[in-house]
Image 1 (cartoon, one colour):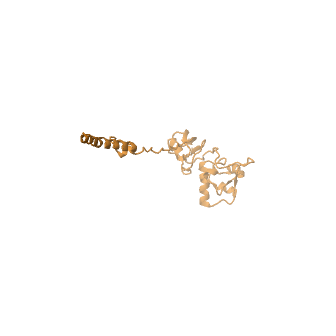
Image 2 (cartoon, helix red, strand yellow; image 1 turned 180 degrees about the vertical axis):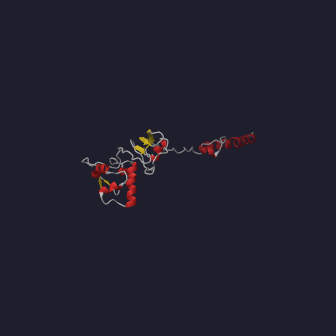
Image 3 (spheres, helix red, strand yellow; image 1 turned 135 degrees about the vertical axis):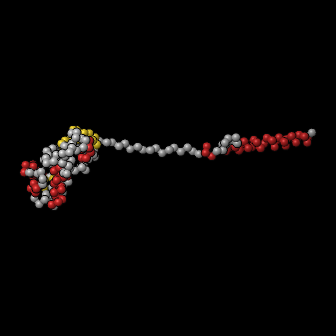
Length: 205
């Protein structure tokens, strides 16, 4: 009787103890032997980076296009557009247009006037919006240096539009700096009446 009982005890320990021990070890490790061991399932999910979108704000400006263009009128353009953009918006030049003194690269401002003259015409003058000319504390306008000013600076003066501003800069480049204020009268399109309006607003220094 003792021998059969001992045999049964040994057989039971072989059949049951290893399995229980294995299950215990697996539970301690947090993984069952019957669960898949795919390493991809154990990888942490990586959230994709959040892309930052920068909103571009465009500013509209209103420009009055006149003269020898196919469709004169008011046109809504974008800040930073050039004079050529305004002419193209108006349908382009007519056959009679005089374009030699126009500065195609000139940046437009809100309330600007673009006038395209016909051949042989003296273009009218329009008040352009002030840009680079600042006011001092005493409400006196800063004088424009005719020897260093650019086209935009000249257009802040009364009676000076894009074509005359370009003519002044071109004259200065071809003949050198002005030695006297009334030297401006040598520029085509600037007569005595125009100079009278400018004299108190310009300087050589």
